[in-house]
Length: 186
Image (cartoon, rainbow, N blue to C red; front, side, top):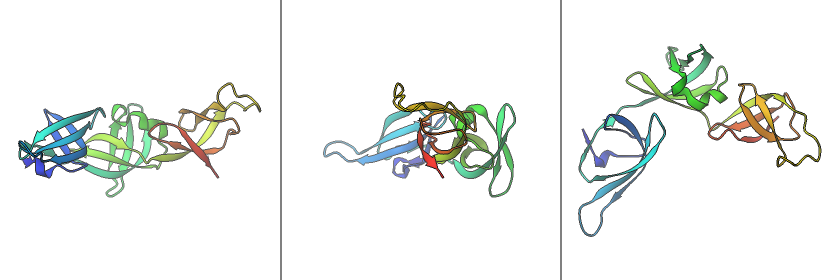
């Protein structure tokens, strides 16, 4: 058991059987009363955030979460197969754990996977990826009914909004957190 003095950003706590990652923490020592630690926690599985306050010196359970580099290999229907970059072991991650990251996964792409007791918790993508547009309607000059954007399907099958001048076959940079178009890549 650790105490509240061991709380740092990125540490994973086990609270009531759920894993919570510390996003922010602040040690507070008011002039009157006892010191306490104010934290902002993010649920590792669901992504929900929560604020929690601990009394200084109280015991907390810190879990060991291993973040390792993996390479995406392929999808096998009910899951996604990744290869560990260090020892070449392969693991299958369920689609529920991969979540929205599946919209941006290309073969041989490097990702970080957080493991707890050998079980994958989440897949951490790079901030942006380069994808090729496989289909988009031709943009009409002067068409501003849609704020100068149109729908485009990228090579993973995901649909994004792009400017009217982009054509099929163009490589674009896409934000993996929001799915937004960031720019054209030459």
